[in-house]
Amino acid sequence: MKTISPYVRILAVTIAIVLSSSLVFAQDEGSTSYGKGFRKEQNGWIYLHIEGAAKNRGEQMGYLMAREIDGYFKLLKASIESRQSGYDWKAYRE
Image (cartoon, rainbow, N blue to C red):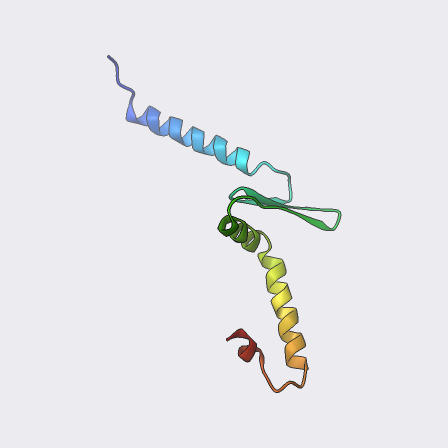
């Protein structure tokens, strides 16, 4: 019985990885994927699809919406610091 060369096996695995990754990231131009979730921007709207267990959905949303979450925290920080509450941003983050 003939054995398959290790080089052929490596080539086959490499081709399988390239093909599978191209299928995962082939949602649309301008879209981003993470796990089973994806984000697509169209006409000024952000479409977000997440699925799986609660932990997976949280990871997907955090990754896919990181830019917006960061922007929200910057806005919240500016709003809190502009008030005369006597507390700074660090007090709210602890």
